Length: 173
Image: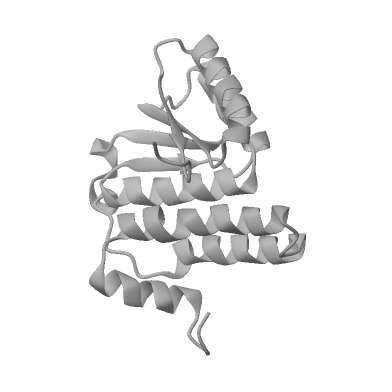
């Protein structure tokens, strides 16, 4: 944070020059990874980590993103459910991905917790409101086991369901 300029204002300034995708891909997702590394190293407290997560989530509500095409043509949009694999970081990464998808015209439903994942799995079992795609979000390789287990549960319920595993902040190579 610089002076009295809030996070959302800084993001608005960034979006005047760049698009949302680099914001998510090159700034916000790496911040989540760095915050976790700092927490693991003892450089920040759990309260500080939670505050940064909260501020990162607030950006999605407060920043001045371009208008989403889904607002006018929601019934023609593909539906994507975004489910977190395990952690709060997974939830935030899924929210960033959902926002990017919305800006490209998709309709998204975001699960805010593993408990809410259970509700959405129940919808799958009942055949209610089936999405076109389910995106399972994982921020770190340690969460891939839970993410894969969630995908296995989804595929056991609806074998034909399209499921994508989003591995955010992973090392490339």
